[in-house]
Amino acid sequence: MADKIKADKAPLLEVKNLQMHFPIYGGLFKKHVGNVYAVDGVNFTLNQGETLGLVGESGCGKSTTARAIAQLHTPTGGEVLFEGQNIAGKTGHELLAARQDMQMIFQDPYASLNPRMTAGNIIAEPMQIYKKRGMLEITKVQITERVEELMEKVGLSKHFRNRYPHEFSGGQRQRIGVARALSLNPKLILADEPVSALDVSIQSQILNLLKDLQIEFNLSYLFIAHDLAVIEHISDRIAVMYLGKIVEISRSTDLYSNPLHPYTEALLSAVPIPDPEVEKNRKRIILTGDVPSPDIQRPGCAFYERCPRAMDRCKKEMPVLTEITEDHQVACFLHEK
Ligand code: SF4
Image (tube, rainbow, N blue to C red; front, side, top):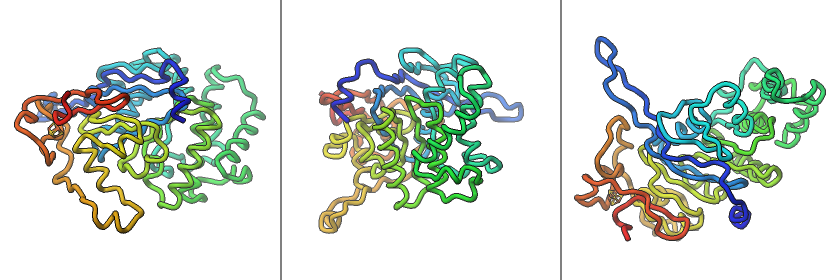
């Protein structure tokens, strides 16, 4: 996959200084008293056919990043260049046109599927919406054929099209979510923890399905997970997020063999190793406390309060993402050149 990435030129998606701040209102008169800095200056690119894993603990801003890219939240600042066009803040027809090529898969397939609609209607709905708006030329018969074809592609019998979500297992429901996301033939899929709610045995089936579909349709994925174990085999590159910022971004193989940021090291030390001897002898890095509240903009490193290797200057100065080797960037004073 890596060679294919090099061959492609302009990135499909370029996120520049993306910010998503939510206002906090308080007091008797519900005055604006501050902000939650959920996403605070995120930059990355994603190429056609590539998978970028976005990893970090709950509350670090991963899902908000995906939602701000899809314009489900209007970004506070920054640019979202999709095929070179900035779609940040776009609405109406322009946004719908971009969304045709950019679809989302959600974490909880049960909550994200309308329980009163059949599987067939759920998968057909995006095509019907775009047809109604005059943005897709397709007949009723073609929609039915496409639904059946997509069901078979994701490993569901077309004969299940009149069943309701509660009649499917968790894994099957996520397959319906995948088929729906594919219905408009997108280029990019924003997959927000698509396997986190599933049993481990089912997780690998869905991951394999996503990999097969990527090859068949040359899809790009922004694949969000809270656990590095899940994204190891699906990601070409991985971005590690902490408190609204990317703290390390690298080729997947480099990140697992040579993590540079203390937070990445801690996340990796929690990934189980199949060899029991190695697993028994390795050192775990236990992080104390939770991700701090994102309602304060800190002058220093966002990870300072939990970092086992913090120095005095880390409290006062903010490290910026710096290229260490080709395609490997980290924001940490331990790796200053
Ligand atoms: Fe830790 Fe300092 Fe590096 Fe931040 S800059 S990760 S506090 S060593």
